[in-house]
Image (cartoon, rainbow, N blue to C red; front, side, top):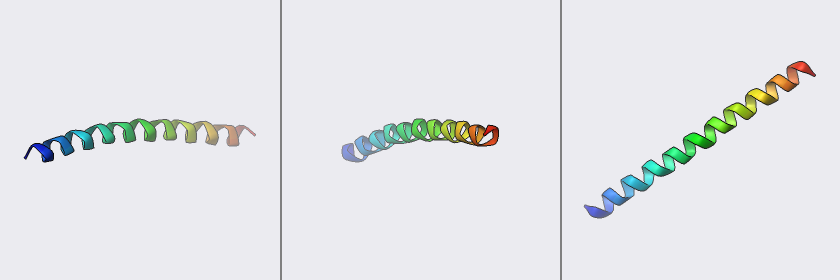
Length: 39
């Protein structure tokens, strides 16, 4: 049971990291799109 709990905690922190990465990727895509429109 303890291992399952530890796994759940790790999954949560990995999920947080993925969320940050995906937010940054979205912002980068917006910047690229904006640059393409202005070019």
